[in-house]
Image (cartoon, rainbow, N blue to C red; front, side, top):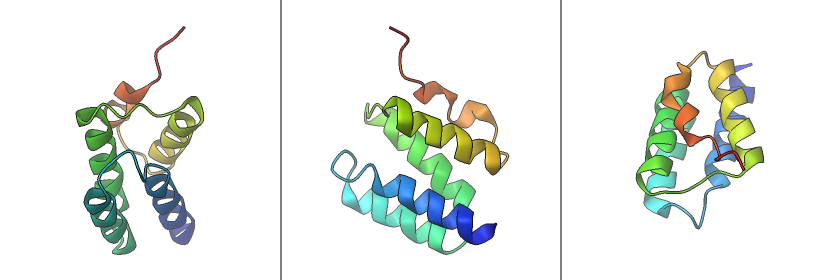
Length: 85
């Protein structure tokens, strides 16, 4: 289970290459590789919001699933929901 979470968070981080600074993403990946998945996840979500990077519907779904699987308070990521059209 732990390896799965680590792989999933790193995969999610990589999806934002080119939309967030590489230095930030490298830092979050390193944090995740050292077992601090929740910190990496929360930092990623905060920076997506801070830099107006809007996840696609699929990316947001991945964020929801990962946040729920790590039992992270949805208030740490729900603000990234794509606008309803």
